[in-house]
Amino acid sequence: MTFLPSTGGNVPLDRRSVARRRLQQKGDLYPSGGWWKLRWHEDQIGSDGQFKRGWSKSVTIGPAEGPGALTKKEAQRLAWDNFLSRLDHNNRTPQSVMTVREYVERRFLLDQVVYLKKAGREHYTSQLPFVLDGIPNQKGKRGGKTRFKDGEERPVIGRKFGIGDMRLRDVGRENVQQLIGTMRLRGYSTQSMKHVKTVVSAIYTHAEQGGCFAGTNPARFVKLPEMTRATAHALTFAQVAALLQLLPRVPRLMAFMAVMTSMNIAEICGLRWKRINLTADLIMMDDELLPVGMAGVREQYYKSEWGSVKAKARRRYVPLPGWVIQELGELRQRKQWTEPEDPVFAGESGKPLCENAIVQRYLKPAGQKLGIPWLAWHDLRRTFATLADQEKLSIGERKELMGHGRAEMTLQYTHVPTERASEVLERLSEKLVAAAKLKPGTVKVIPIKTAVGND
Image (cartoon, rainbow, N blue to C red; front, side, top):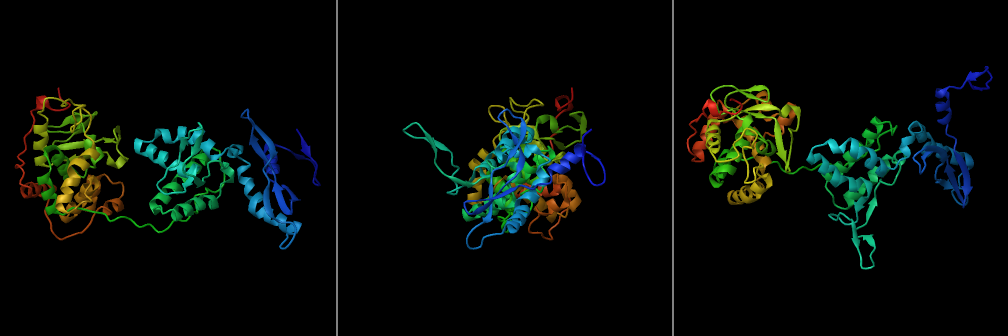
């Protein structure tokens, strides 16, 4: 065992002592070109991928000559406050000498992003260029490279203040704040700035969990401008009735379900026949019983990709109004795409209908005619919360129907509360069918022998 001499006798030098010794950062302070410069020993990654000790790049502390020159003690104090005191945390994690870009490509994308749903992956794909490469000099321009006549590729739109080429340990709050401030100067929304801040935070949280970073997350204390949210919309009862009259049969049924069942459009598109009970008895659905007249929400189809529902609370049973059961029963009589695994709302290829195509072809034109050009699928889901509140369903009942984990989320969907009341959603459905002049909703039950999940 190795010993260090001390006034109190021999002190054993174990691994913990080495760690403490290495954290006593003294650095090398020296004058150069009229300025105080500082460098220090640090762990580095060699070309062979091995860690080694070496000198850091020099940083400028302050003037050593001329007006405002700092004494050596003043320079030492500034060097400690601004640099050396911060190094103790990350000297415990030599991996933090990787650049942010290297960490994202080698660890973050492969350990974190690749396991997200398609929407999550696309979110990081769109936001990482802002974090790694910086903010475009012109808003709306993604940058990139173009091959010129001489055969070389050059950037078309420049970017500034990206942290991708900085080492993990060197990024501070001021660097992230500079990103956010530049976005504001370029006219980006507060929501866009929040996205960038969240991505930086996610990268460093992942690095800390993996032992590649120690210290304060540089996104933690970054300030954002006040959030100004867009106006949330919900349709009135009369607007829903008028909308249903303008839509073709299948889009009308999908819109009706969005309003009356609280399902979002991804859940509606992801609904399979095996998860709808149109029979008079309980049926088996994925090794569980599905009650009569219910739909089991277990999957979603979003951006042309199947996936699980958004959150655990979204796994729920949804009661189907009588008119919906009748329409689904008739839809089930079509010649193809009626097997248990087939989507209820299938296109010609057998894949679920495209929610965006229905918006552009049917919802938007209908919205223009009704004076509600903002109409989209989410407005119909929000309308459910509004009408359910008018019908005096309790917040607990609405929470269960909408699949919210917290009651506070449900309250965000409730708008224009009134005193109009009715006892149940079925009665509201019947009123809506009558107002829209639809065929009366006499329930047509499918015989058990053709029921989903029953042999």
